[in-house]
Length: 352
Image (cartoon, rainbow, N blue to C red; front, side, top):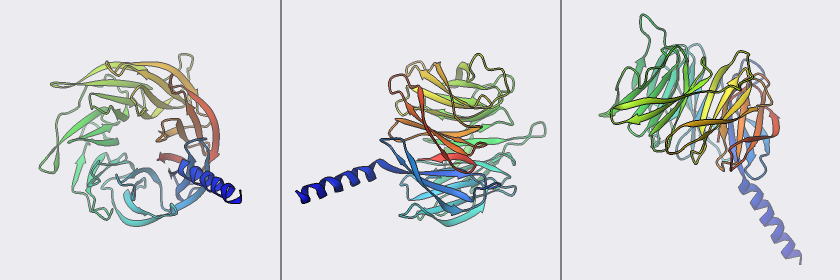
């Protein structure tokens, strides 16, 4: 009997451990935060616990994994600008591998390609985008390419970039454009001035690409809107423009982040000002969006958010209220239900 009880207890502990996955939190360190934090997230209950400082470092405002999850990278949003690579230790702590110049001021976004051989950093203050070779040990080389988007007429504010197959897409809030670079002989070449014409000055900030690459959804910081774009034989064309705000909201707002659900049926967007997550149902055939909810984030200034790997939860980093809010996702309708809030100093990026 004792052996059976011990076996059941052991199985229960192992199941609990299997449900817990790491969450890394990027922060601004001009307040109480000291760097990158590490927490455990339970994919069964939605609980966040075991918060610890993973490494002491300045302004790690955006984070990215290597494909094998052995290394982590950060854009360090300082005046001079740098990016860092880290080895992930068994206890979740990080060991610094390299620290290199971002080749621009205030880098605010970093992404890694699927092979783990290149990283791209967007310099908001400097208006440039820098590409870096990554060594097999996770360390970073100096930039191999730097694209300066500034012109005499316009100041660039590069805000995000993503690799997709042989392409590199860049959202430039200052130039009011999303650019496409093509990979040729291991170098990226600008394909066109912009993939689509952005009417007015909506301020493209981040974007989400469908798995097939047929659709791109661009969130506009100034316009509080989402521009839906479809790939054509000749390039791209805009197919829809949707407000992220509730019809009754009349205050100021700045959009921040955008993500598709794993199955592509829903799209989520964050509003800073309305302090909400806008939920859209997506037609997977036509790419069109239909808003179904504006869910309060239970915090202030939701900069970045993420969906957990199980697809059952959405977590929001509320910068000004110093908390992470956890929501359960309705698997049929995509809508959000608030579960809990955990205090974390100045969270601005969440990485599963």
